[in-house]
Image (cartoon, rainbow, N blue to C red):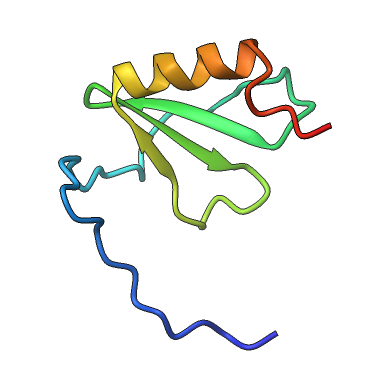
Amino acid sequence: MAESTIQQQPLAGWDKPELDLSSAEWQSTSRGRGDVQIAFVEGFIAMRNSGRPQSPSLIFTPAEWGAFVSGAREGEFDLT
């Protein structure tokens, strides 16, 4: 597969800081059965793929995280 040459740029209106995640304490969200981890850093919630920890992390504000968790609990992301 060809390596991407697209430069990642912050989205317009992006109001989240560049967080230093190098010393974050990552936690598995599914008792080790899944491949998603979260960390609480400087008042934000970071989420990453534990199988590819070098990949970019998603950053959520507490309100965004609450909406995401509520949606997941209600089956909003169920693709079956």
